[in-house]
Image 1: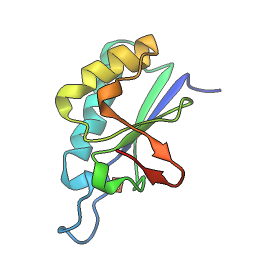
Image 2: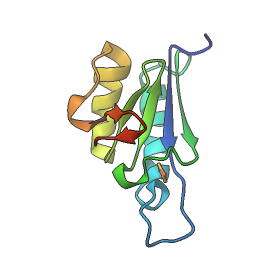
Image 3: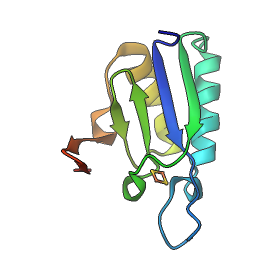
Image 4: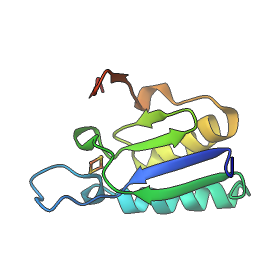
Amino acid sequence: MKYQKHVFICNNQRPDPAKKSCGHEHGNALVAAFKAGIKERGLNIQIRAQQTACLDACVFGPALVIYPEAIWYGAVQLEDVNEIIESHLMQNQPVDRLRLRFNGPHLEG
Ligand code: FES
């Protein structure tokens, strides 16, 4: 495995601005904040954060998913980034209050 953890952050902008999308809600800023936070801590060899297209969790966004655990987060704010990095990425303790949980094909939120 190339990376110990891989963070996929949606920054998709749906064409209809009336429909919620992560790219309209600081998705790009989240990508930048994760990249910077990981690099600042010298973790960028083991952990990669990158933008991704729609994760099909638009109404719960801004959304991201971390592998290999397949832990999803929703409504992620810029002030949550350090907590996710330090708790989940560094200590393997997911941030429960931000988690999205799947129930079959649907998210429970
Ligand atoms: S626009 Fe981000 S999950 Fe769909």
